[in-house]
Length: 118
Image (tube, rainbow, N blue to C red):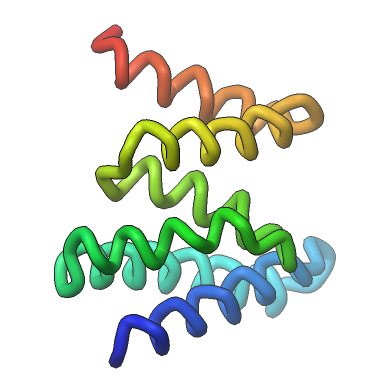
């Protein structure tokens, strides 16, 4: 797959996650598969396309549709090495979500703990 194809697939996966219905077992299973595939895509982009791929992937933090910005921010910070400006922008997206999401609040705490070696 090309870099562009991987990024387009990633966006399709965020759409699956965004439209998940917790009351529907099939929907939850599809969500879980989509999240796993998103991590596979992140890994593949980092491994096969290096800094160029990471820079292209980082543009997803500007895509609000289906909360692609949030998914990309989290997974990028977890699995890729990015510059300070990109990191700050991704953290701002996550911090905004953390105001209403305990899960994101815990994610941020864990991120800072790892970053600070605590």
